[in-house]
Image (cartoon, rainbow, N blue to C red; front, side, top):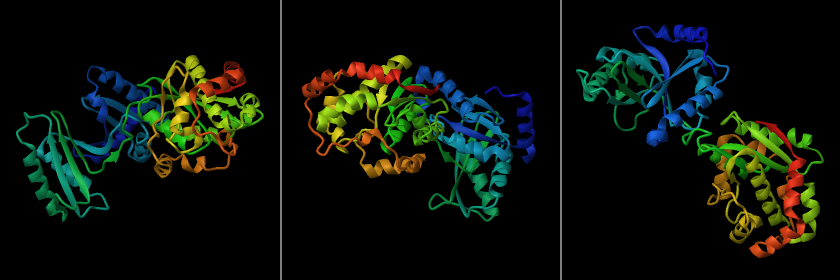
Length: 400
């Protein structure tokens, strides 16, 4: 997003209203990105791009400050901006702060100003870091000065059982004083690990797997095989809502809606093997889409032993013949753990809505230990390559 000079000036006028040489800003910390060595700048540039995409339409300015980013925005917009920033992968922490002059007096004024805002905490921990060592005072002196000032305000300073932490970071040209810290999404900026294909069902697990893919920097291309007569019905179903919810973590989203009737017509005669045949079909479909989109790998919501198609034997069998690596971030999670994550990321309510999911294909006694050779034989009889090609030609593509 290109920042207009006029918008940035209006923000400046708003944030300078604190007076006393202090300005409000939001400090964004990288976390894991700081370990990337020579590739660090590329990761940070991608992070900046993603922040601008996440906050598109809002007025703000953003600049790099060595091991962090500084974001300046209007006070009235800061709450919505912080909420958006918490969904940007690559940020470890988000700290609204006051920027003051790097003097004892400037730091003291900023701390008193922050603690003067209601509701005032009863106790605080003071932590200070002096990044610039040439200043005529050290961190211990900062803490001692603030302890005296804060005690005079009736706020206890302690190292145990404190309500809030007052953080001071002193640099050569400025000091940053903060009282609040919001946890960032962590991980890597979306796009830093290339593209991946996410096999998205209407259930609880696969949206969580998509979230983990994005957390490790992969940009998702969604593939959904549906049971409707036409693609338009699938495009207006809860799947679109799930993708919209996931897109709050990565604004760029592309989805393939693939009809399942071609597969089902060929697989019905195999009875107990139909669920695992469907999984093998999906993996080969994902591989085709990956070739079109330049994706490196496939993500699924598999959890070991959760259903018949996810037993160890069946996972090995369905994977045989696939050329792309399949990532299964939920492989060791139990259902309750996955449910908790789905609730936290905001997809659970949509996932449990009634939906004619093709993954609900249920033989009375599905095979739980399919031999790879047996599955390969059935796929050959089905003409799986032709089934995948025809299904993909009948698909619709949304977004991108």
